[in-house]
Image (cartoon, rainbow, N blue to C red; front, top):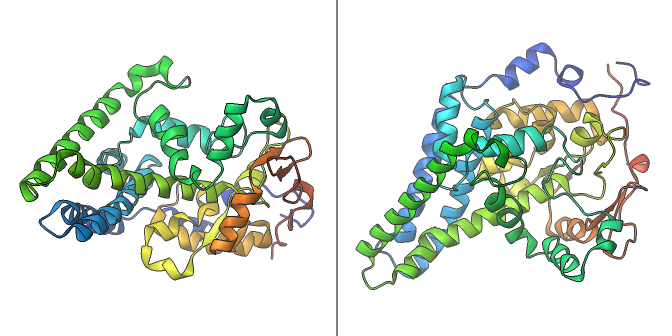
Length: 368
């Protein structure tokens, strides 16, 4: 591709056949080892949360267990993308098992995430992951709806956005408008999720009472199920927000304006937290641009793919080293989106980021 041609972001443009084979090929060995380690961490932390230990140990382990829910979810996410193991049936089975602790239906997630989110990333009306209101929508909304949006895109929104906007209304039962018409397709996965959660909660209450007879069932429920789920939902909201919110990323509401390159290469964020490399899969999750550029890359190969992507497109990839200052700046800047002038604004409609045509890089580095 010459420097004058518009980039597409498609795999053939940034991956050689050799590199594509290397990053896209799933591994039984890597997948199995990671799954065993993460399940061991999940059950160990759950035991720590419920076991015969002092309360501060139970409380600390409960928080760790919430993080472990996220690690299992990441495996399930890859399985639903059919790229964690080399075998389709193995992905289907492992995906459902790893989604159970966090209460997710694999088939509902596949529809919402694979079809809508990946199919039209950052396209308002299709992609519902942290989709911003337009300035006009916000001004026309009721006072209560404006209050909800202010809450949703503030600090507390990082805790409650995912369960309220996505998990409860879309990923447990087929009750959302886009899935209820085909509810039979999702029925058995929803049964699995509901029965599985009842079993998990019952087991938590039973073992918690055995190890701490003096504790109420409510206290056991809070430390064994509710707090870990709260931690996991915060991680989900926080991560998904930073994947798709930055002054230099953009949303679209017209088909003629949307493109795979603008939405997935320029519009999806690659974030690095060098101090947290020991977090393993969660660290890889934040290298999100490569995942959107090619969603069939297993999570354990995403770091290599990210390097190749950035080598090809350079500063066109929205990338930064995470700091709390960055987080606060992005949280403050990305409130509403002006679709007419194509830039982020605050709730008063004041521009807070560059317009699409004024991004720091609109074209990739020249191919060698």
